[in-house]
Image (cartoon, rainbow, N blue to C red; front, side, top):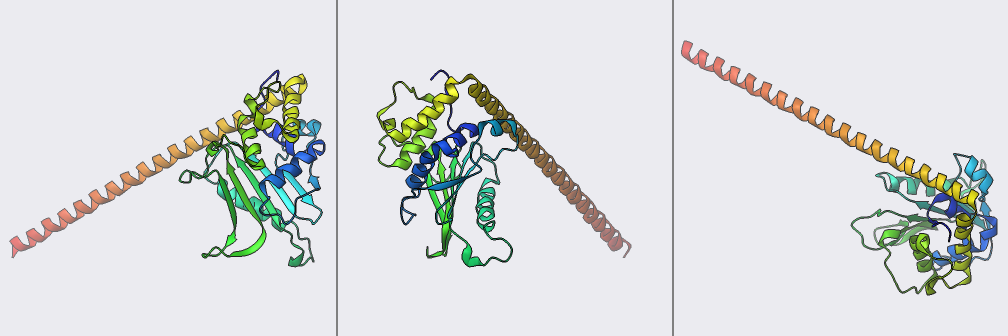
Amino acid sequence: MKHPIDPKIDCVFKALLGSNENRNLLIHFLNAFLAQELSEPLIWVDIINPYNDKEFFTDKLSIVDVKAKDSHDQIYQIEIQLTYYAHLPARIIYNWADIYSQQLQNGQAYRQLRPTYSIWLIAENLLPDDNHYSHHYKMRDEQGRVFNAHGGIWLFELKKFHDQQIEREDQRWIKFFNEGERLNDNALPEWMNTQIMRQAMATLTRFSEKEDHYYKYQARQEYLREQLTIQLELEATGEALLHAQQREQEAKQREQEAMQREQEALAEIERLHVLLRQ
C-alpha cells in the first residue's frame, strides 16, 4: 500500500463492516463470531445507518458503530473501542440495554422483543486479571443457567490475541484488525489468502491510494489523538483533584485529632487542679 492504514480507525472500520458494498464482509464477520450462537448462518442483513464517506467526514457526530438487522428482526451491533476508561464496562452494558429496549414502541408487547447481539473489539486490555482475549456475557444465574436467551455481549481484547495458527474465521478477523496496518497488499501472508480477507484488504488499499480518502483518514486519526489526549488530561486532572481532596481531608483529620488531644489534655489539667484543691 502507498500509506499504512489501520483498520481499527473508525472511518476504516465502518467502511469495512458498515457499508452496503461490503455487506458480505459484515455477514461473514457476524457468522464468524456468532457461529455457536445462531441457529443458522446469516445470509442477509440490513445495515442500519450505512457508511457514507461524504456524510461521515462532514458530520462530527457521525455514528461510528455498525448496526444491522436480519430477516428475523434480530439486531446486531459491532463497535471498535481504541481506548480504555474506568466506566467503559458500564457503557457497554448500557448500549446493549438501550438497543434492546428501543425495539418497542408505544403499545407494543414484550413478546415482540428480538435477540440483540453486541460485539466489541477492544484495542486496550479491559480485564487485566484475565488472560483470555474472548469473553461472552449473558444473563445467567449463579449456576450458569441462562435467564434470557435474547443475545448478549461479546468482548474481544485485541492485545491479548497472540495465536499464530489461524483455525477459525473469527481468529482471522482479529488478526486482521491487529496486523492490518502492517500488511503489504502485494505480498499478503497465507492467513490472508481468502476471498473475504482480500476484499477487506482492498478497502484498506482504497484509503491508502486515494489521496482524498487518505487525507480524511489522517484527519480522523488526528481527531482521535486529540480526543485521547483530552481524555488523559481530564483523567490526570481528576486524579490530581482527588489527591488534593484526600490531602485536605487528611489535614482536617489531623487537625481534628490534634484539637481532641488538646481538649483531653486541658480536661486532664482541670482534673488535676480539682484534686489539688481538694
